[in-house]
Each structure stands twice: as structure tokens, then as C-alpha cells.
Amino acid sequence: MNKKLTITLLLSIALALPIVILTYDRLEWPLLAKKSEPNPAVVPTPEELQEQRLEQGLEQFEQTFRQEAAAYQQEITEQWGEFKQAPPSVWISYDEGNTFRRTVDYETGQVLVEMLVDPKQRLDQIQPELDKAVYRLMNSTEKTAYESDVVAQRVEQKMAAYGDLLQTDKPGDQRLFSIDDLLALRIPREGFYKVWYPSNNTAMTNRLASARPDKELVRVSFKVPHSIHKKAAKFASVVKTAAQKEKINEELIYAIMETESSFNPMAKSYIPAYGLMQIVPRTAGKDATRYLYGEAKILAPSFLYQPDNNIVIGAAYLHVLQFKYMRKVKNSESRMYCAIAAYNTGATNVARAFINKASFNQAVHEINKLTPAEVYEKLKNYLPQQETRKYIEKVARRMKKYL
Image (cartoon, rainbow, N blue to C red; front, top):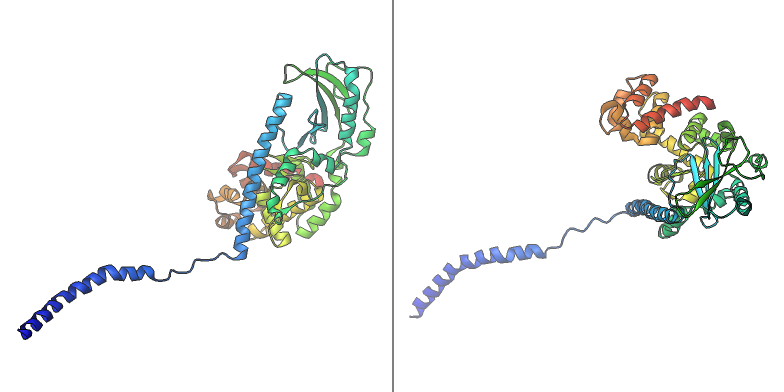
């Protein structure tokens, strides 16, 4: 009996063993695999973290600019009934709590100082305030001009969290206009002109309908008589130094300044871009500061509105374009033409003029087959955007003026 029981138990165990092993294999081994230690996560380096923060900061800068620009446009529209958009060659600013609108066209020299008034107000009541507004404008400095740029100040205040990456400056007391322009200005006192007659430096006053039905516009208009060469001469010293340091032509810097802003130090655009050479913080600003300082910075308006800073950054960016991105282009003149186009539209779009692909490295082979004149013609005729086709033509033509 015991012997039979023993045999029965042994047979039971033998038959059950495969089932136990099979069960263990299906249920327990996966559990053991799940309990194994995972591979350690890849930890970004300090440099990679800094680069991520830089990109976040640049995105935040542009987003803040768009928000503040839209809010300010709404404020001005509510007060004036309109908001005037202007190209970088035209500086529009507001004075004394947005009571006066000042417009300076750096390309033509035309200056307007305007004031919203009650239709019942007489000119002799208004004229003293207008005279003071003209005097303030013609005595504007970099500092007072920056103080009138509400959007720029708000953007910088809201970017305080990126203080270690944000490159700011304190605008100085350099005059925006020549003292000779102010001294030569004559404001007639014998009344006002209902029709505006252009004159070299005599201020004409007229009364116009405004965008607001309940207000009229009183406008003082005159011309600042300085020439392009006179405006360019103000920056001769810093241009010469920057050109020598970056191994680029002085006439190239002057021609780009004229094309970008007509030498308006307070130039700005919706991109946003700032100053004489219209520096875009996300592209030119980032590349130039990395080259100059060893690490990229977010360039604030207060930094870029200063002419010396702007020229140094613009020249450095031209160096980066020619001697980094386009270094494989063998001919220096061809390389310069490509850099001019890239300054406006970026290297990938320059490539499309030659191979219809967004790869400058692939385009180099085709560029090196061409003479400088042929490279120029290709860019002038085949760049994707008409704006850039005109841009390279303007810069190339204007360079000859500064030889």
C-alpha cells in the first residue's frame, strides 16, 4: 500500500512539473524582466541646456514683441483714430503722452510734427506748444529717442528673467540731428498755410482733417537738408574699425546701412529688426554674438539702437556669412554677393538661386563654376523672393558711392 502510494505521488509530481515550469515561464519571467533596472536617461550637458534656454529666450522675445506691438497699436489707434505703419527708413514716435506725433523720413529728409486739436482752437493758442515740440524733436538724443519707444521698453522689462542672456545698453546723449539743422530752421510767425509748400528748411504750418471726426490735425512740416554722404560720415570711424577687424569692405557696410534704414539709427521693423543695419536678434544677433563673445546673446533694442553697437554686430554678421557659411566659395567677390543676398534672406534661399534646393553646401559646386558677374546675375534673376532680387541690386549699386 505504501509502495503504491509512493509511486502514485511520484507520477503526480512528474506530470505536474512541466505545468509548473510552463506557468513560471509565462508569468514570472516577464515580471522579472520588468523589475530589471532601466537604462539611465541621457542628461543634457550644461552647454545644451544653455542653448535650449537661449532658443526659449529668443522665442519669448519675439512673442513679447508681437504682443506689446499689438497692444501699443491699439492704444495709439484709440487716441489718434489711426496707426501709421512705416518702413525702417522712417522714424515715427510720439511725444508728451502721445499728444504729438513726430515723423522723420531719413530717405527724403521730410519732417512732420503733428498735434490733435479741438476744431475751435485758434492757431495762436496752439503754436507755442508746437514750437516746443519741434525744438524737442530736433534736440533728440539716443536716450530721449529710446524713451519714446514704448514697445522696446516694455519688451525689455518683460525679458528680465533672461537677464544673463539679454544684452542691453544705456542709450547715450549723442544727437540724432545736426545742430546746424536746428539753427537753420525758421518757423514763420505770420499765421499758417492751408496748403503745404515744400521748402528747404522753413517750417510750414497747416491745418488738416484728422482720422478722428471730433478732432483736427495741426501739422508743422519742414526738411532736414543733410545729404546721404553727410549722414554716412557720422559713422566713419566705427565703420572703418569694424571693416578692418572683420576683413570686409567699408563700402559694403555703408551700402547695407543705406539700403536697410537710410541711416536711421532708430529704425525698426515688424520682424523684429533694429537699428542702422536692421539686426534681427534671432539670426544676425545670435550668430554675431556667438562669434564675437564666444556665446550667443539676445540683443535688446537699447543695445541695437546705439549706432556703434549696431555697426559692430552688422559687420560681425557679414564676417560670419562670408567666412563661415560661405567659406567654400572660392572667389571673394562671388562670396560677397552671396553674403549680401543671405543678409536679407538667409543662406538656404541663396542656394535656391543656383540649384533650386535649400542647401548652400550643395550649391557651392555650381557657384564655383561661375564668374562673379555670373553669380551676381544668377542672384539678381533667380532668388526666390523679389524683395531680395531688388535688395542685392540696390546694395551693389550703392557700394560704388562709398568707394
